[in-house]
Image (cartoon, rainbow, N blue to C red):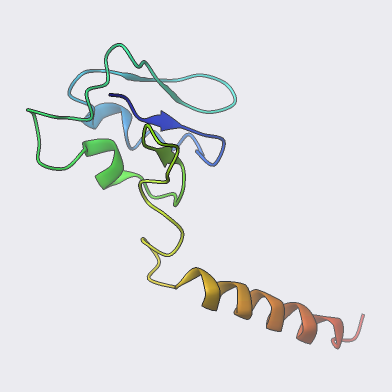
Length: 98
């Protein structure tokens, strides 16, 4: 069992001090998780600490490659609504004077 940090990570350092197994380490271009050390906090906490503190949606994946903080989970904005708002903003922005 091990989580994975992907390119959405912004290297904010929030997860490093809360990992009970010291599995998260600084790397370039983003932090990584040592799979030999990560046990997903099983036996230590009810909720994985890195997932509970990560401020970036989609930066952490489970073993199946699914985001642990999927789009909309932190902002409360459903992905469909967000896409609609971005599209609307783009259309309106095209009408703005240069």
